[in-house]
Length: 320
Image 1 (cartoon, helix red, strand yellow):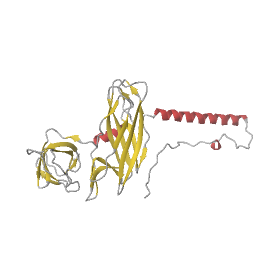
Image 2: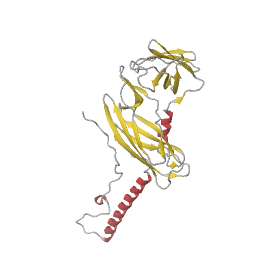
Image 3: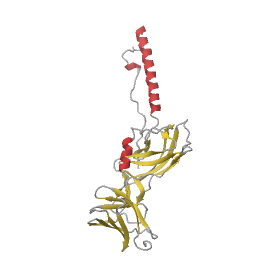
Image 4: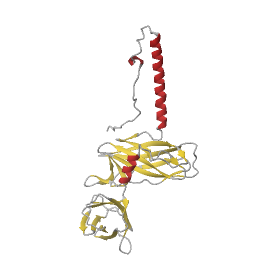
């Protein structure tokens, strides 16, 4: 089967030739002195343009070019214009996908794999865990996956040691392995790199990536408010999540962080209550050992998404 790949490169902004210049004569025509001067000037202009283009490219080298992956592109981006020694900063893995294709959340669901990153960092820089936006349910009625379509940015917290050298730009590289799926799945790999200056003063935001990071943070699940109360029980092969959130909830969905705890394709049965809800989650038939707590992302009818970590109410652990 033919696999389509989008190849992205640097396209010329202008095409210039002597033949197209108004001041240049045909090659078989005797050139007057003023015409010869015009041709020389034009050549100098072309050289100046080329030099300006190189300088412009160097000035923007703090943002990496998009790299092709199956049915999409991937780019390593920075939130700030430079690294401040001794401070934290953020990078992002920005995916753009063709319509209908998707990548996976940290728990991919019934199939698939999440993106994997292997960093190559200079001494003094460390990378934290990827921050995962709230996923969506994908797949078929019998096979349900969790992931992202269209565009998504995974934020990567970074830390710079105080003794990070200030003389050379921080050269950051990452190898990303990703599975891109529709009716079929295509594995892809991208080698990304980014160079950021290292300075002692506080870093300034990069206006070119500002909206990407705003959207990425908006898509992250928030910690559940401390005044919300949850308890977790089990009955007849299911987990039962009861929640008191101070208002009636008419729609809720739960995305488990761990695989093979609940049946992803089974309906999540919601019973609204005056101050919350009761959500029944069918156990996975692949659950091989008892669990002590249920962790994941809870989405509610008001559009909010929340991280929850609920231990079992009863003494002991849930049985498989």
